[in-house]
Image (tube, rainbow, N blue to C red; front, top):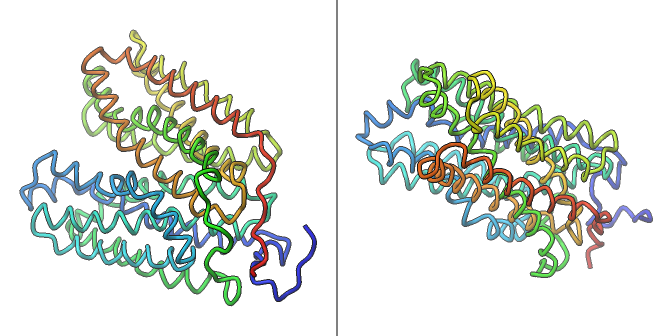
Length: 408
């Protein structure tokens, strides 16, 4: 790409300085982690919330999953909204919305209030999750984009892990309302911190160029389908692990929860490994093939006759590969874009697919396990993994997208 004059408003930070703005990317990443803490903030204080507000177990489940439910239906519209408003304003506005809705959670007196506030939180959350990777792509040099996107992919397990670990102790000390209020305050502080750190002037702008149509979105939608399948058949393994450990191996609820917490954090290692390997030049297709190891790992968990240690080893393997494949799908997004400034809408498709997989996976696993037994989950996982890995292999063959053009 030939150099552009300094008056070019479409100039990206990496074009002008030839380097990745790691410090700014770190701030954007931390904003995502703080937002993800809202996903898991009710997990550790759920019993106290249910007891005080008189919630049934299904109602508590709706409160916990409402944020993901919003993402499952609003990801693509959020992508177009971020494109219209600009990633910077969308990120800050999303953080503010999550903070205000979180504060409303503190004042909740019944299920309807709590569910409505969580729905608003979900809108803010999807804006943040669409805007952040679009910003990261602009802040990263081309050689680092796969790395930074794979790091970004770890924000959910990190946020939920921090929230789960801290929520028990802080919730006991401050009460569930104090814990929820603390998260709302942290999110509110993140909004000005991000705004002050982001590029200023001509670099702080809405996306330019034509809005991507159906043809331009064909490959991102195919990638989103692969990502949805990855989440659908791997995430429930970790989510439902406590139930398996209690029912099949007689573990206590406390022990099962502690084991699952450790195993879930292994997904972060898988995501970070993708970044390291991409930085060293490992092809996307080679990394995608490692996802096939999910099948033998699933057999260790559900195949029958496995020991508790074998089941835990299999679950750990699935967790690592879940993080690896999820990060790889997100890092592969630039390979599917016709133009780099389509990243906002592309991220919306990816976010919607991931939320849909998260929403449908656990009930699907529950239905299969209840109707046919745990071993029947192995072929279900195998089919999903083979299709998703095959899609990643096909989509990985693509030249780099065209950069953002000069403004008219």
